[in-house]
Image 1 (spheres, rainbow, N blue to C red):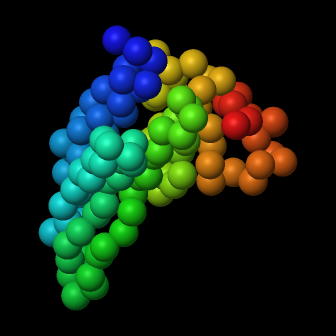
Image 2 (cartoon, rainbow, N blue to C red):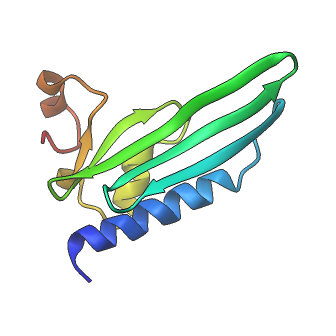
Length: 111
């Protein structure tokens, strides 16, 4: 299995495991969105918390140039660390939500 295919499987497994944990407040479902052809992966929270509508992106990851880009993370999960534990080298994990000039100070890749 090539590296990108391995990364796809790791991302899909991690996000699938994440959505199995129910959200504690409101009637909110976490939905998986996988665009495998374009290597886009998201978890979106949809539902109601009392009278308040919830529709938000919890996690967004892309595979770009053979690297896993964490574009957004509004969860408490340290997703970069989890991806690393599952076999993706830190140098292939890019914190896309972090300004490019700050990435050199993280434990992850710079792009």
